[in-house]
Length: 81
Image (tube, rainbow, N blue to C red):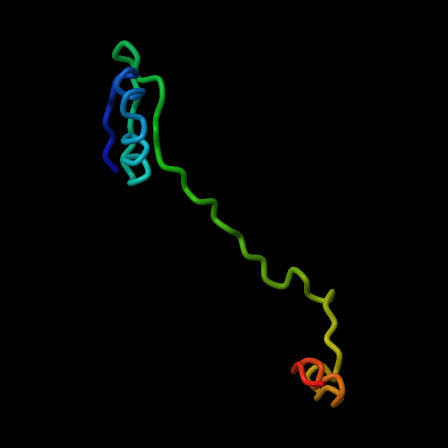
């Protein structure tokens, strides 16, 4: 990841271009009077934590979950009359 330094006036003038460069992985140091005062860098996506078994024991599935529907209910689901 390359880092470049730029003065604050130039940063204000070319902010959109600098944001594109930062998003592409290039850090940009913004300086005032030759001293770095800020860094423009890409944001990292927060890492999503997956916790398996979080709902274990709180969901119940009936024994006839996959049983055939009654004929009248099946025809309603299929849009028949």
